[in-house]
Length: 418
Image 1: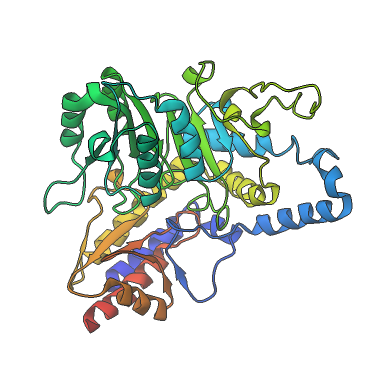
Image 2 (image 1 turned 90 degrees about the vertical axis):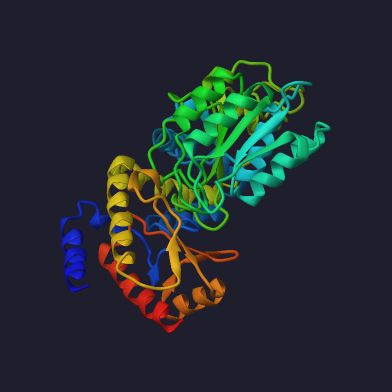
């Protein structure tokens, strides 16, 4: 492993993004490899929060309209402009609001309109539970039995990853019955990246709409939602985008749907901002326009500030540059893990281009939750998914190759103890 230690140092030395690490507040004396669950804070977010806390204390309600940094209008562009670039979307196709599951509910109201023949929803598995709960609830609300209306794409027996040919086969055989194809661009458990462009094309040929969960893709891999003609997408910002615990969600609605007469739950923040405060005279909802029309309630201003600080860094670093480093990081982590012997296996795709930032490890013949405790006792923070999966996720913004090497050394010692 000595040669690999030297390799880690060399990779860090050659890393063009290494200076970005200094822009984050990192835990002391710990290896943080849990970015797929919660990203760490940008240092600039502390000052930005303090600035607006001070504005709140000095101006109170007048902070909504006072100054160039007023809460009513000034935060929209700093959020949506870099986020739309990050997601490969037009500016008016993105809205920051609510949380992911709430946004999924709001968009399913618009896009899931089943008919007698086309009523099924196709999902990938393993599906994040919250997505599954939401989808099943909409099936039931339309009188569709989930046993009949839900199609689950599953890996083959004794496999962990979906095969493209299996997805294509389901679309060919069931496409005429499917109303919505809803897939995770990057799977939360395995880290597998799906070929959304190809899947969307095939689904549209069959008359299906396509929605995506991009919670584990936004800030992880380059996205191209507009050009790939994804109909809608929902995501969260507290993972790779580092907006803080329970940070704001966001939604994408393709411009092809902006002027359609879709069913929608209306609320005053989705109303035209020029008429929003005409409370006595404006009784009819006038849509804001674009994806913003799906907003319902007043946003949490303070919750948006850390996201603004984080998106500024993404704009500077560039998602393609981050992706290049991320592929090097997961390749190096995989190379190190291959040197170890123990009761574990990697269930993430072998090729870096087919996976996101994470490497998922299946622990055999041992309680994986206790294994996670051992990692924590060795000052490693990662996460566990029942019953036996440990997810390791280095961030290209603030994790070094040397940290990846140190993780594997400690991991090796724990494996030997089992």
